[in-house]
Image (cartoon, rainbow, N blue to C red; front, side, top):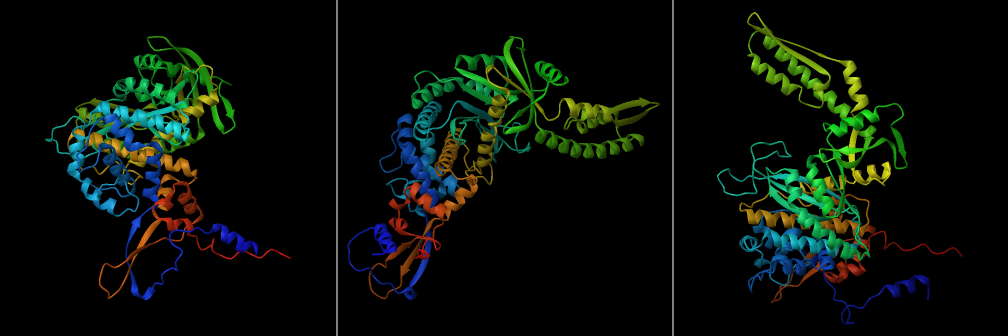
Length: 558
């Protein structure tokens, strides 16, 4: 027996009776549609590993109707829908019908928009917070996530809720989309250092501040700290560091985080007094030194001083990045070009006496309010003999001083005094993890929050929870595959693993047989079939091969 024949025998699997396979006349068949397998199956596999439905149901302590889904089943169904085919809740049933993997043993018709809103009205903030902590515990334990450095940040999402609609969550605030005519809903999230996996989140009113939101999360952060210690089975409590931007800086928060067991690392605003001292120290000859290694382009200077009125003992590291400097220079060039056009127009209008002084001063202030322009562009409004005049000029010396001492630099503030400059800079760069997560939640992302068709606060809160669960599942799928592809490309590749429904044309009476055919699979897709056990939904996947895999092997040289 040849080696090729032996290998073929080892690859055989008996599925069903050993009768001769039926012969189908391809001319008497027709394709009637497709069904999702790969993307939905991968997400449900991760949900099974976490025991997601059980954890949510136990945390909420609610009993669903006898003929309807539980809160855990509904959240999982919506999370998978948001990830694979974002749409309104009234389309969840149709989406589930289009999938081979099953979220629940209930019929798809049980997952209605009305059922979602009824369940949302029973869920409280405490229920969702408890569920998040238990899910984080399970994710860290099952997928061995690194949690020594956690990133925190906030964003918000546009809604189209009318101004007259009552509610506390949808508020007009500083929208990330730069729109001022819409009410927005805020989302604060905490993610792991590896995998961008959300461990804790909070839905908050769109007009809330970062400091307020983080302060409200302190109790949950303490519980999460204990839960992660339990999941990692550490003999002693871990020393975790919370990374965040300067928008959430306050002395009281620093003290409160220390009480909860967290070290802090944040980008201190350049306008802060301590930042000014650190920048002056970094401007001295020889103070900035290269970090080396992966951060070879980065230079840093270090100083340890008391910060704030409370005299907090902090290490400040001024980090200079050439990439950031180039980006800021490009931004300043664009802003300066626009400001020059605006100032010239204002200058002509002032010369013709067509603009009052108050309006002129306001317009000048607005024109120079972008990208540090007020640091090196001097504008003077004068009034004499009943006329208003505007004189302005660009000061090259001040511009060069700005580029040499401030541009391209961040001031990192931490109580991790034992960390090296490189470790501090590298840990702060992990902030991009949460920024990447928010990009996935925006329009056109992997699991977009919007468009949202919710109006009540309870529905908005549960809708956000389901969206974050979708982001969690995607992150863990990405981590399991270990692919270098982006999450978007990975989910697109998984979505191509689908079943084709073929129905036999026959003049005989009775129901016509419908058969599911598997597609040709790439090497990466075959790995997904194995990793996420997609064969349990379609056993034919276990024997499917791509065209390249079915090519006869070359005979060995003799």
